[in-house]
Length: 92
Image (cartoon, rainbow, N blue to C red; front, side):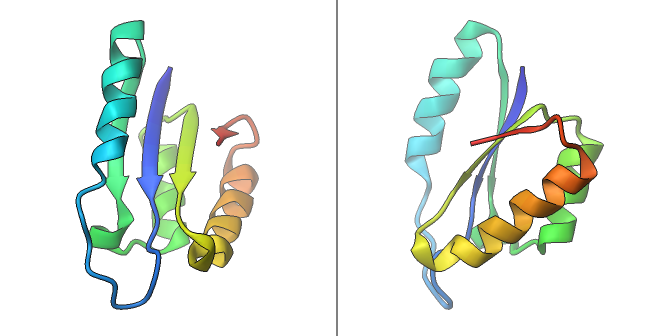
């Protein structure tokens, strides 16, 4: 399965640290035959529509989204837009 792990911005003006735990998931899933990409949206600051375009264009079948409560609105908007674009995408 082709999947992407996305870390969403947590707080405005928050300094970014390396999302090392996403690397653990990648190391576990790739030997099982999955293709895993990681996108740190704190660094790229993509809008929800830009992320949807990236996900659809690259043919991801599963999207893992993480963030603190302060990212709830963004994550909710992203999941709604993703399901509109492709209702077969698995979102966790």
